[in-house]
Image (cartoon, rainbow, N blue to C red; front, side):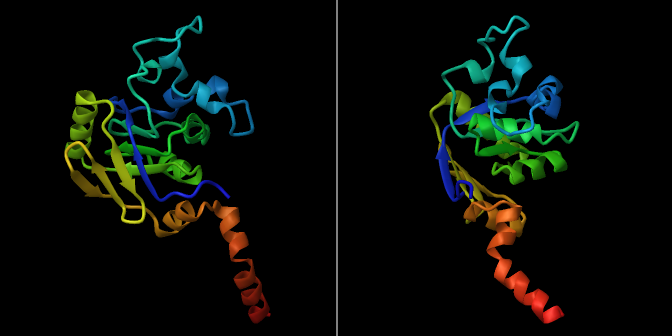
Length: 196
């Protein structure tokens, strides 16, 4: 069982870049590992560190002004190769939500499978979020999964977001696909008996 997802109120990390692909999220040289742990330290590695391994102070993840469980990203997040490691890195770093106006489909599903909620908003709402964070890095956003709403608490504006019903159930109950099947084991066995 994973951590159940309900309502998150958090400050945000802004990444106002468009077309961020999975190789930028987690460079290919870090894909050798077979477990999900430890990927967070290499999230956006080539933007966070120079070739000598020194922190690039100007990059947002190295700026203590920003923090929180919500990554606010530009349009077309997670394009490129379908590597699941990109979602592992986002989750391992501690992000529970990624907000963008558009996600690549495979990456969006990989996030959901790793208990990270991708929230699709309109471009004007996204632009206003970036403005609010720039004006006050301590402002919070509320993501309400049961109601499927996201609220910019600095302006009070909200939007609805879409999510697959099955994935919503899994997130709210802390279930991955195998957990879900196990919770329905009795029903499956009864159906198998009735089908004989």
